[in-house]
Length: 182
Image 1 (cartoon, one colour):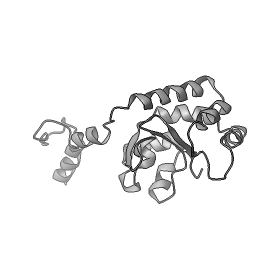
Image 2 (image 1 turned 90 degrees about the vertical axis):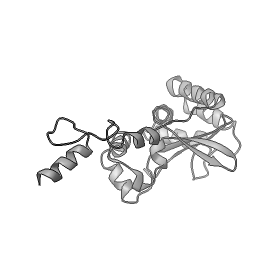
Image 3 (image 1 turned 120 degrees about the vertical axis):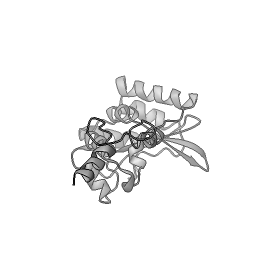
């Protein structure tokens, strides 16, 4: 029993427990995997410029400003109901879900990169792109902080991502800002 406890504690990298050996390289167990998993590739200048515009709208703009920016990209997606972007975001605003604030919130989170036939797409938040088996306890805590208590468990149980997802192409085109099932 003592040995099993020691193995469990060593796996958590708590070096002060008597009888446990440190990992051979001196790093906490699993540290390399975490560093790799959260490595963020550099953003192209065009993506950075788009992010800056979106942050300005988030800080001082309106849903109309968002809609004007969305109209710059043919085929931009904001909803599946066939509504104009401006009308959809106005509806969200009237229900208390301020889309401008959501843009700012989402852009503060780590992003993922997807290589597609049309080039690279940068997607926020990264956690929305994870398979349910890839949701670690740390990611689950982040999901619950972002979306509300219990949302990580619901996603792990197979429910779709209920939050916002934002995509920007490597050329800086803002491709989509959609809200999930929630």
